[in-house]
Length: 395
Image (cartoon, rainbow, N blue to C red; front, side, top):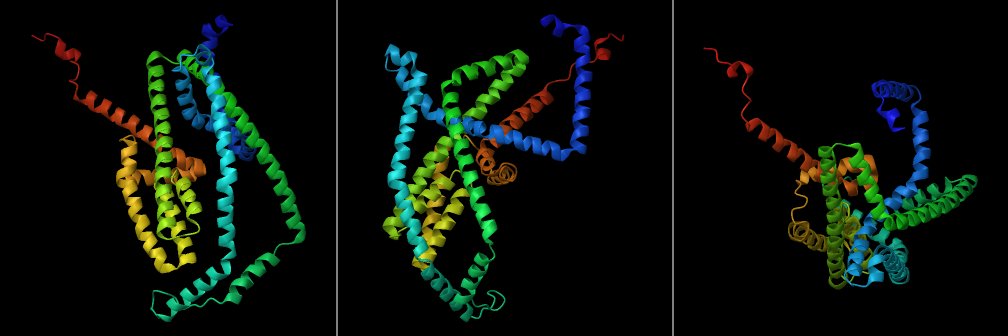
């Protein structure tokens, strides 16, 4: 088989084969584009749980590696020999305990807050109508339009919306919803199982990929790939670590302000929302703060919401100017404009996941571009080699 691939005739035919394959693929893409989109959709539906499992395994590998190092430091031969499997088992037990605590403590508290908020809808609507009517009475020309909202009008819109649903389509939606629910449960199960196996087999998988890269590329190309792969891995690890710690700090500060400062019944759920949205760079904390201010405005009045907005804005400035830079340690020295562009492009092409991975990827691309510019600058400063004409003795 090796002699077959080393044959001069076979090697000379490879470029023509690749060109023919590219022409056929381009022709099929232009004439039957829908065929490829449907094929990719079916393919993605199959591999999506495993891709999700790979992402979960990558995130869980952070604490798993830490547990593995602690086991290796114990000096126990049994723990050292089976450190990877034991670390995965310990991590799974910790995750199960955390999920149990969340289901028993956090979820009921969040559910009670949601029920309390829904029960207060009539009061919020009345307060909103009163506020809008008060604003209309100010008679500010060209700033606030002269409009009035009646309670009957709001409920008429809701009733018309409910009446627009037909019973048949409603039942079809329920059946489709159950089918989607069970499909989602099965996909989640596959993702969890595959993530556990990926965690256990991480070292073998990593060794195989490195061996493949080394065999398929030259030594310089191999070194470049490994260099920037490690840099990208470091960027992702650092970003996940920083955003998690920063989200915990920011959520705790917001909970303290909302619960002890404003006595809000929704302090816990608003702090959780803010901590989760903080994973979205630049915009996440802004959205979380806006949601908190809106809830306070509906439940405790506009003046209280304005005071809360000022305090939350101050906390955001403290976080953005002192806490986050201290945690980042210069890992992502990106300008705010570049961050906004990165997040926008990531959201357009990858949704929420694209927003989350945009900053580490752009930071790596910036490092690659900086290295290339330094190479060009260094090459430009080098003296040009002497020409053949200058080397000759013309005398």
